Amino acid sequence: MARIETPNRIRGTQDIFGEDQRRFARVVDAFERVCKLYCFQRVELPVFESTAVFARSLGETTDVVSKEMYTFEDRGGDSITLRPEFTAGIARAFLTEGWQQYAPLKIVTHGPVFRYERPQKGRYRQFHQIDAEVIGASEPAADVELLVMADQLIRELGISDGVTLQLNTLGDAETRDAWRGALVAHFEAHRGELSEDSIARLAKNPMRILDSKDPRDRPIADSAPGIDGYLTSEAGAFFENVTNGLDAAGVAWTRNDTLVRGLDYYRHTAFEFVTDRLGAQGTVLAGGRYDGLIESLGGNPTAGVGWAAGIERLAMLVAEPVADTPVVVVVPMGASEADFAMRVLALLRSGGIVTDMAFAGNFKRRMTKANAAGAAYAAIIGESEASAGQVALKHLGTGDQRLVALADLLAAVQ
Image 1: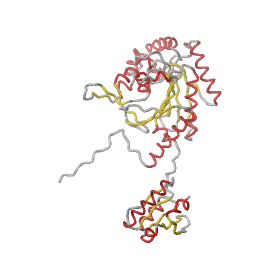
Image 2: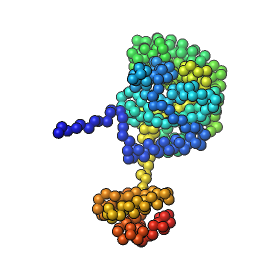
Image 3: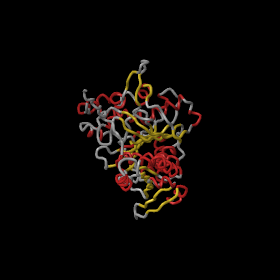
Image 4: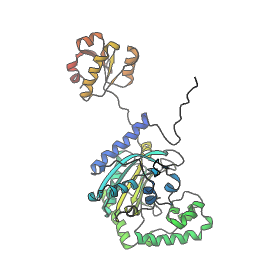
């Protein structure tokens, strides 16, 4: 008979287990705990959307839309895209599900997202994000709330050392129009020195050139005019209110006047929490205000601000969590004691005791498993114990052992 070839895991995906899974869970648990402190509601979203949701909201000139999306035609002939991020889908749901009635709406979510890009350290083609959004609040206080929450999350994860909040303003529409004109003039003067991608961006979205990673573009981008000379008084006051709020909350930040976000819908506040502990991939959490997004999807002008973070990148920074260990391992000496062992397991677990069972191998191997699991006790069941409704409860630290009736077992362990 021909040997069956086992399919390989697809490049850019991952199977998360053991220490990696514990780190992953540590991030998610901290995120959910902090979100409850700030009264955010959890929302669940489809993994795929109509391609138009992302093409309209992210912008046709972004790398995500032009190069990275997983887009396919379904059996009905509709163009479908696996979500490359959460914000656009949340904005779509806000409109189609009538969530406007709940504005200002504070919501969070987490789960897998998909981008076709070169896999590298902490970056996969299917990866996972945590995401937080406030929709329908135009006040700077919403920006402050999200930034303070992000800062607390990073502290709760124990990774704040070496992580810096970089902050910028992208201004209002009037500011952006004036700044855009100045950027176009600057980059046109250096057109012959720009990369091919930046030349393509020059006509549609010159601010993206500021974010270019191409070495040919960096000197030109670094010498480009900053936004401060074009800020309207209203945009300047908005940014000042954000920074004053952060100062009042005790959140440290630094100004980065070249910081732009890679998506077209951002306005006013833009931010990144960055670290040098991940090599070139230094951003661990990023976001900003996107007051133009809902409108781009056909809704009324609606304010919005949010952030997202890659769970894998955050997990790489956290200290290795201690593996969960059972309090009791039930050790039946043979197959004939299996039914009574199930009664013991059910009793302990219903009483809130973390319990495992060593059910494979001979008695010696089963006891070896109990010791290796780090349990406090082994509940040993032989034929005589099962007949008498008892277990031999052995303290694996001291070696002490005594017979305990099933009715008294919970109290003995507790």
